[in-house]
Length: 326
Ligand code: PMV
Figure 1 (tube, rainbow, N blue to C red):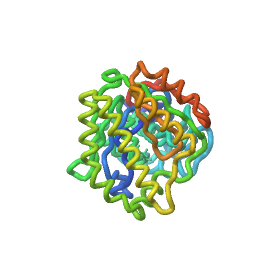
Figure 2 (tube, rainbow, N blue to C red):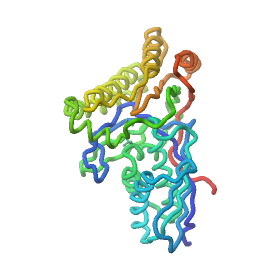
Figure 3 (spheres, helix red, strand yellow):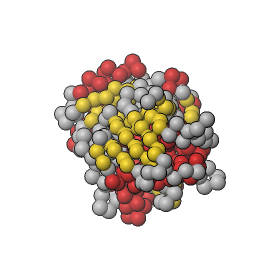
Figure 4 (tube, protein in one colour):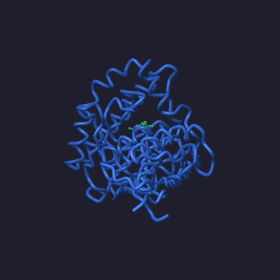
C-alpha cells in the first residue's frame, strides 16, 4: 500500500517533576541530564502534515501564522523522516495549540511529538520507538516524553543517546495538575539559548550535573512506590535547583513573575496545612500545582484567589501522541 502522504496527530504537553536543563550535544540536541515527567490531558497540540511530491521546502503554520524560526526546526525534524522514507517531498505543516505557545507550557514538546507522529504516519513509516524519540528530540529535548502517556522517564543511555521509558500509565496514579497562568505572552529567552548561557556562565551548573542522577533515581522510586510526600519534596527541590542555576546565569534568567512566587507560597502554605499538593515551574511564569484528586478543588480555589493569576487550567494525566482521523 502506498503512503497516505497526509496525517494528523495530537500530543499533550508534559511537565517535568525531575527537571532537565542543559545540552550534552547541541547539534544532536542531546540533553545533559535525564528527566521525569507526567503527560497532561487538558491541553494539546494538533498537527497536520501533508507531503507533496515535487514540492521544494516546507511551509509551516503555527497557530495560523507563518513562523520562520519554527520552520527551521520543523524542517530539521522532517529531514530525518524523509531520509528514513527515502523521499524528498516538501511538506505543508499546520499546527495549533489550544493554550499559550512558547510561554513555559511545553508547547514545543507537544508540538514536536505530534509532528513526528503525524509525519511518520503520512510517510507510512513504522519506526522503532527509539527512532521516533530521536527524531522528536531533534525538535525539542522534552518532546520524546510527550510520545508517551502518564509518568515518563527519560535518561541518558550508555550508547550516548537517551532512552525513554513509560513508568506508570495515566490511570495507575491519577494525580491532578492545576496550572496557574500568570502571563500569557512568550517568554523572554527560549530554553535553547538559556541552557547555553547557563552552561557557559552559571557557577551552579556543574553541581546541577553532578547531583542530577541521584535525583532521577529518587524520582523513579517515588513514582513506582506512588509516594506522594516524597515526590512532592523531590519535585520542588529539583525545580528550585534548576531555577537556582538559571538565576545565577549571566545575564540572569528570571522566568518568574510576582504572581508565580505568590502561587508558590500558597502551595507551600496548603501543604503545611496537610493538603497533598506540590509546585513545579518551567522556563516561564506559569506555576503547575500537582495534587491528589481529592485536593483539586481546594488547590484550584486557593490559586484562583492569587492576584495576577489570569487563568487556571485543571488537568488530569493524558495519553501519548497518537494519530486522529483527518
Ligand atoms: O524541551 P526544551 O529543550 O525546550 O526544554 C525544556 C526544559 C524545561 O521545561 C525547563 C524543563 C523540563 O525538563 O521540561
